[in-house]
Length: 452
Image (cartoon, rainbow, N blue to C red; front, side, top):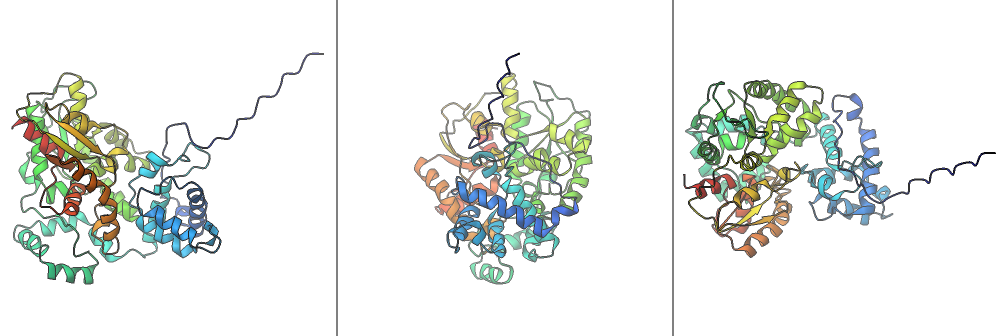
């Protein structure tokens, strides 16, 4: 009689997840995605997991709001929280993804399959679908429309001046719900698209490693209409390094503001406007980039998750780079100039959330550190701005609380310069410092170091 082999030992349960996080495509086009009862059931499941873990309590106001609701309920468990109060948690999530990427041990491929940001996105989509989204929020996220109007040469200086009048801001707060003390961006009468040229498709570039040596800049709503200066700095730095820069023939908002609203139809319209143009640029030999981390993330992650079967979306995703990631790739191939004329001294550098979650590493810090005599103090804390969250009357105080640790780090560093790849985060930090200093975009600092 042959000896029977012992059965394999059962796999022991484990607390967290040892594999790299993975994202599932978003089933936003399936009717069941908008089923409110199914959504609430899933929110209760995930909230219960979050309640039992609480690792993410320091990230934003969504988690303290959830845990306070639980702790103040009769059962002190999620089942004691009224379903109507779930939306208080949703309101504070601005989809930074940091809980998913840096804190949560239960993200897929863990069997609990917790994707808190995408669950909040689903809740926002249901909210939008049922007509519960505020008109103010629809207007604030209509960046192309607002930018075109406020960027009219006669209108721009009037809007900029009005935004500095306290009495008018108080009226705007009462009528529109935009906080009177929040920092608001100025509008430029001469957008970036009028400042940079569109080069012909056959412009030569010198390849190096993964880079093809010529770059099409997605101007973005903000850099185009509000702060075109860093776009000009970008073009100057790249030209200094022999990298031709062009702009797309046309573009719309990347869709991130509408995504954060749960307005998938508007995201689809933006995608249908942008992707064919960008895909053609890729076919013509151009690499792609943008100076706003959220826009880069949109093309590298969010649009591919919404449209996973679109080959042009995947083509654009593969060709999209963070601007400093691109420079560092060139540096490693011996194709980045280091003929710096000026030191930058000490730089307090805020790493933007939507840049961190791209998993590309600290590329901006690495490039700035190439400048002799430069020390970069990196701050990996959310600024709490999120484009619209910090300007809303009901959330401004929360945004100012979230930015306090960042301001404390900047003040402690006593830097010669400070700023962020997210220009709006940089301005929010400067606004919270309230000492008259100004944040500077890292690409602006690099141009200063080159002396060009």
